[in-house]
Amino acid sequence: MFTVRLFNLERFMADVRSLQRRWRLWRAGAVWGVKAFGWAVQAALETHGTDPQPEKRLSSFAYGGQAVIEGVMMRGQYVAAISVRNPKGTIVTKEIPLKAALYRGRMAKLPFLRGLVMLWDALVLGTSALMWSADVALEEEEDVEFSFEGAAGVGLVLVSVALMLGLFVAIPAAASHAVKDVTGLDSRLAADVIEGVVKLGMLVGYIWLISHMNDVKRLFGYHGAEHKTINAYEAGAELTPENVSAYPIQHPRCGTAFLLTVVFISVAVHILTGRPDGVIALVLARIGLIFPIAGISYEIIRFTSKHLDNPIVRQIVRPNLALQHLTTRQPDLTMIEVGIASLERVLEAERAGVAVPQTRVTEIPAAVQPLGD
Image (tube, rainbow, N blue to C red):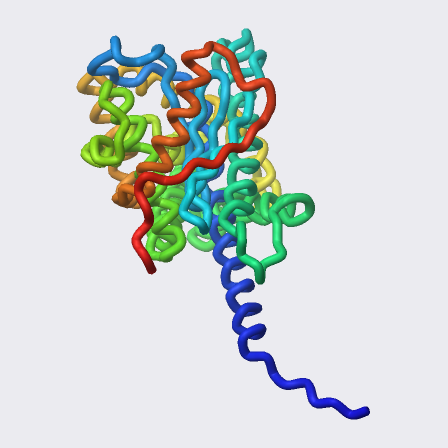
């Protein structure tokens, strides 16, 4: 029997929407890959920030976090809490117990090494937070059968790392090598400086470019909500969306500051360690120096965060704060509410002085409802 299968426009449009959602999430993942070191180090830093009203804080521990898809992750001494607003408008929070030996043990007190170990763990934690937030963002989307677990998650991480290495290691190194060959430049010092300038241009240019994408604007909005929430807490303010919204959108411990510091420290380290001949050898040498440079940069950010009352230090961190104008957006009250929900779960563990026994997920109704599209 001959049958005619009619074109199903509704199903076709659902497939298109599915592809659009997947692309937005992958694009957000690519953005995270470039900022991975920066956001992770912000979550890992255990420095003492400025504290106008220290008696109102639970401890001298400096809380950090990162923006995720439609949410915020906050990290304390005992737990990391990821709060995400799902399609129903409610706030879903996942609490992850942190490794005591890593965050509160001897390893966390060894200069340079502590930065590398905690940075690696924070990268893993940041990846997990991003994947989970993506799955929550897809919740109850009947036309989407997609998860960032398994191969999809691994693929996203590999693409993100490759993008980061390509943009900020391979291209600057190759560009400086090409300039040296074309111009006949005989100064390795000048070549290293050129490489640093190209790297800085790539960093600022890339952040400026992606900051104009609508999805990234929301991601940066949650980044701003995270900053405002921590600033309000460190000032001893009551954590309500209205109160928190009045606080600054910049924060001296932001991971963006780490990225900029890495660029400047890399120039100094490259000058001191020499410049191999050949572009392939040069790129491989630069990749090998990533973690030592990260360790040094970690300690510098840690030091400056502890001495913000010093006028010289304040001048040093001005470029770091200026760059945050590109990586943050003014959040609305719904974004701030999510940031508060995340920090409050972390503070509950701080008050108890112990981590949750195992990972747990809870859902609460939101007091501030998102505006309709």
